[in-house]
Length: 303
Ligand code: AMP
Figure 1 (cartoon, rainbow, N blue to C red):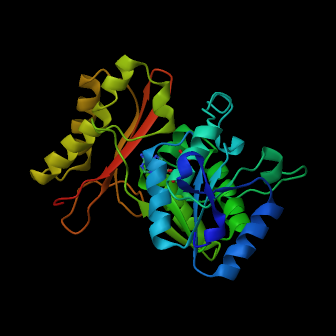
Figure 2 (figure 1 turned 180 degrees about the vertical axis):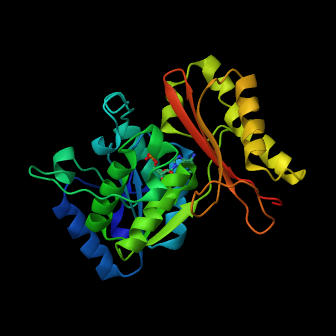
């Protein structure tokens, strides 16, 4: 944000950047037009709120690459199944806005459901095989909802670049695919997973964990590290790498494993034997108490 007129004095005389709150398409279009007049790229970070340092890393990366950064907070109903946590998903608007402003975000788009899905809405966006397996199999329709809302948000915001976390690895590949296939004029950027000190990937859903579950949840990361260590020690068989990770999870008492999968990092196709040419990705999904946790790691042979 280069516009000095949008800084304001706060108590104690400290200068703080103001962040605009945009609640509808009209305000968003006006904000975009003003930024376009100033020049420089617009970066966009879509979120569902309940923000943590993982989200903020995307805002900061967008700020390094773009002159103007806009985030969105929208808990998208179409990506939740009927038995899922849509109604109890944490909504923490004021702390979220404070964190975004502090991280250097210039504007936040806060649409209502009827703004994204007005009466009469009936269009769908479906990505093919990339969306069918793993989380797509466990959560039928989930990625249709993601593909739909991302398409709508990209069309609304019209950013130059959009920033996504590799924490949601399958989602990242799906978004990259749909942007290519639909020829959307935006660059999709994927950024590394931000973790807690014990390795647990940060997630808005971690707050569902009890203190005891929270301790056990570190086993997801340890399982991935164990698989990566096995690969580095020469293990090439996909199933064996999966067995090693699964044993780790079970040892920690995480017995509700939805999947442990070694896949090709670009296509998510199953891998029988890992080659030297290509580093695969291992993806995990586990239920723990009332939370569903996912994580992944590229099983790189060297750092
Ligand atoms: P969500 O609010 O969960 O929809 O996430 C919004 C964006 O933040 C997505 O692109 C996520 O992949 C990303 N994200 C969530 N958690 C993390 C994390 N721990 N590290 C990096 N990115 C993350």
